[in-house]
Image (cartoon, rainbow, N blue to C red; front, side, top):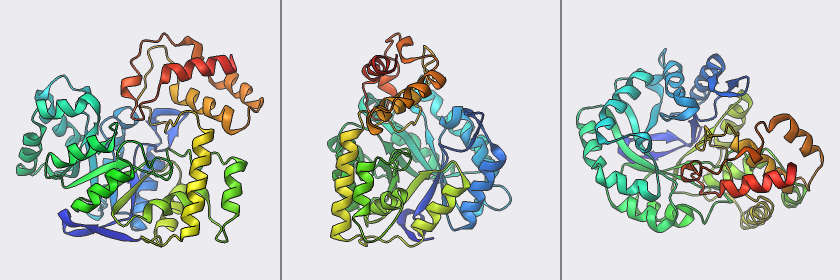
Length: 376
């Protein structure tokens, strides 16, 4: 496994990081992790050289941290850095920060957390960070030995906001969403370059856009890949695009199957910065432009919008909405709608609770209305 320097830790870290937001589940229930398989996958990744495991308080209905903790037993804790995140946006006040960190230590069953992030800084949440004096809390947690390094994950509206956050505190690292489609949203390439110039380690999330760059492959996109002499899978092109950036420290991938673990390890075991040719980069940009043309709503299926007040499976609906365009209005999609969209999009009561929670800032209510018009 290729590694890159992580100066704060005084060590190198694997280029591939294991994201524990999309672990295998039972009967399609995101809160019921298939623990045995998840543990087997995490340990297999570590055995293959992965030395960064990322989870969060809210993942899998607040069950991910405990499963990661179980996977790190039997000597695996000593082989990897573990990262988790403070869900300050679900807290009532700053008095809940310390008890939450203690709860996370207990869930993970560890004495300390290597990398602790303020989870999902954006919009009004940035003001909360300052109002609650979270910098002081992080410094105290470090002094107490509960965390080693402090960082943040960012889903804000612009590179300008990312720069403001990055400059506000001597962060040990940062985490941003970046893939070859999302180069101009949130922190984007501009934010990446700013952090890299400051020497701040950069952890990348959503390199495959929640699987959207691999799960479906429109013929119009495949035609671009076919023009290249080097034949690679869509996942490989996407991961290598991120790995091509020299300022990237680790690339997180939310893996749901052992096959994904094996493929991602294979890809990032020999991916290097600056290795892509000008021709390859040009084709990747053309593929990105085609995806942008086809995908109506850039949902990554992160499930932050759930649970829905009306019981709607919003990520499923968003996927079917996008599929209508990706697959050229294939009538078979209406069969999938009847089978899986229950309750349907028309059940939306427009309460608006979902939209402020969406890291992609999508107009979810509008998308549900469009989906109802198309399928119902």
